[in-house]
Length: 240
Picture 1 (cartoon, rainbow, N blue to C red):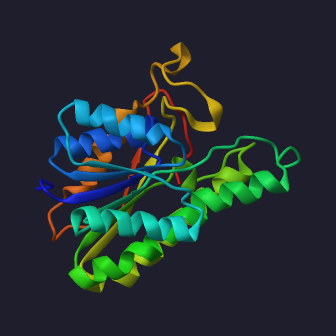
Picture 2: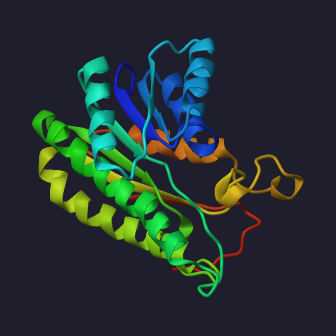
Picture 3: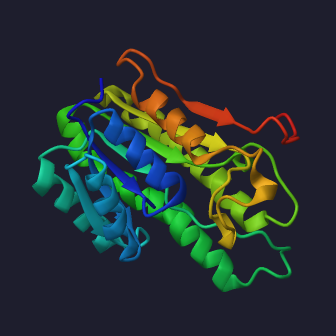
């Protein structure tokens, strides 16, 4: 169903974004993978060596409006269409509010919220013209409930969840689907952590999140999946 369609995945240099790119490529999608550092070029080479030739690497800061517009333009120049935008790039910060600096707060909102806003705003004219498209944002289970020592991060995820819900209603008349994937604890690099640590062996794996994205993106046109929430079995969490 996704064969020969085109996806942009932000934050795709490693971790969840890299795995999403790999899973979508396995479904036959052509990719534009986006990262903030030169590491994105190495990820593109890895995917191409695995037998996925249609991988365009784009180095961009998703909080910068000009660079986001360039990201969209480069993808259209390469493939002439965009069917899927996966807003995966994000920062994690887990500090008490007294320990959270204004610079911390500002940067989290620039990437986690402003980056999503800019990407959606830039891609909508193309998707509206085609009357088709899917936008998936990787939010978090803390878009549904609060946690201590994570006020800034939680606030960004609540913002993204509200933004996505509103946009979904705005664009449905154009055949555009908007949804979120909200994972709990994932064995990845968030907040400076390392992937593959022994204490995270029972957490969600990056492929679990990537599989959820594939499922949402592959839904038949008559079906909208608004939200997927997934947790590792070992995680206790409040029910929203």
